[in-house]
Amino acid sequence: MLDRKTPPHIVDAVDLHLQLKPYEKYTLRNGADVYAINAGAEDVLQLELVYYAGNWFEDRNLIAASANFLLKNGTKNKTAFQINEHFEYYGAYLNRNCYNETATVSIHTLSKHLPALLPVLKEVLTESEFPEHELETYKQNMKQRLNVNLKKSDFVAGRLIDTYLYGEEHPYGRFSRFEDFDALTRDELLAFYDRWYRQGKFIVFVSGKLPADIFRQLDDQLGDLPCSALALPVLPIVPAGEKKYRVTNDPNGVQGSIRMGREFPNRHHPDFLKVQVLNNLFGGFFGSRLMTNIREDKGYTYGIYSYLENHIQQSAWVISTEAGRDVCEAAVTEVYKEMADLRNEPVEAGELQLVRNYMMGSILGDLDGPFHIMGRWKNIILNGVPETYFDDQMRTIRTITAEELQALANKYLQPEAFYELVVV
Image (cartoon, rainbow, N blue to C red; front, side, top):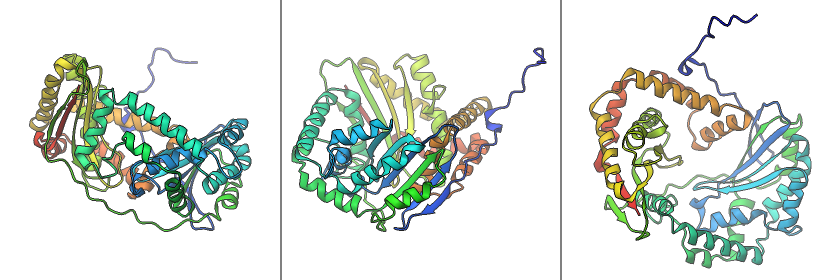
């Protein structure tokens, strides 16, 4: 019988012993690596192929993203409608995404239907045709979407801050223009597809309740695809010379978008894990310094956050918010005030414990289910950090001191290092 007079024992999240379930690794006969997490109660799985076919590898803007988007819009033997109908018949979902360095093609499906879906996935990866009418429809739709987005201050601010941080010609800093869509040709897409998909390098991530013969299925369908060795080239960044920008996008706008950012090392730098804790204290969650001051106390915004960009080669530390046009400058001033407070005063023990518990609780949520677990491993593998990275992160959250955080604030939260942008 329950003893309702005695409350249950409460454990701080920081005291939880969190572990990342190990993956199983296979190698297809073509040399492609397969990382697998066999877990979960439901008979579902996620299969994701990660190609080194992102913006990094395009000769001209938008080729990588457009080729990735149009992958499933027609092959030699199937129309876009037939491909979509095939996956929908099995209650499955075929998705694709393009990022800076990589591009992905993924399937979510009931495990039992994988044998019926893999041949069509292979067809998409080897026989896509990029029909002219599909390309024209895509260009028209994307230009219409761009036309709408360019009226939004937050969209414009997001484009510009990356350009200031990395340079307009860098993959991290490039943005789309109408003329870029107009210039797209089917021949360019086919050439990119042939080089970076049909002849490129890919890695397979599969997670969920996996069939006993999962490796055989993958090797049968994907093991004969070319998988070339590839080293990611290093591209230099060319940041803007000026630090402060004020842009009027809509003369009648009543809201401004604020972006402040500075360059920051990638995950290989010894400060990265520690600064993740400092970032959460500064602006990484609802109880952060920025949110408490600028939202709760001043009422300048509905929300303000800071974050470290998740790039493979070069990162950035960015503050992002939207505020009333008349209080944008005041909000910027308060951001610098919070930077100064973190530089000048060590964080109190209670606030640091709150941040520790928040971060551990968030990570606990990220470990809920095989798809999330694989997401953690994918981040580690693609960034090339040690497999102890997760344990190192747990150790850092538990042991970092107020003095270390203050020293990091003095190192990185210097106003003169930040680009400052307000778009109205």
